[in-house]
Length: 110
Image 1 (cartoon, rainbow, N blue to C red):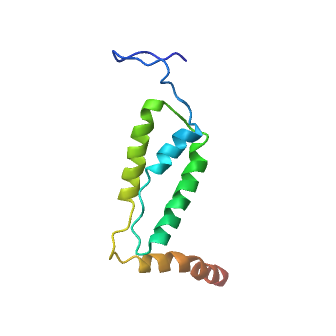
Image 2: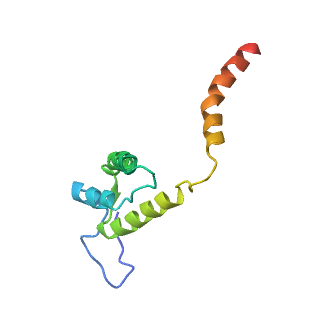
Image 3: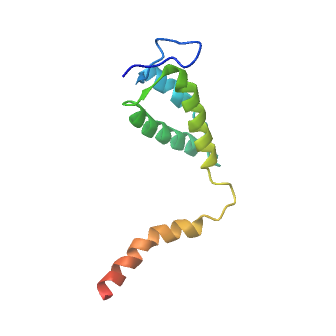
């Protein structure tokens, strides 16, 4: 497949390639701390997110010029998916945790 220059400037080195460990580190260093009352929990949550992203990014191809766009997209998704403090999430969590235990006995009755 040949790339076509649709812009006036063209960088021949800006082709999609596997991300290097340095590229992945730059991406992961921009992940913000999640809101959490305990600082250590915030670090633990962010480290888990970094580990999951590192595993998924190591076999992805991306043009070097698009790394900044990827960082912005990850941060935007991170900020959009946080739960607002004070939101009642206990009922949803309890419902999700207890659903399987409720369905199993009901299946046996049928």
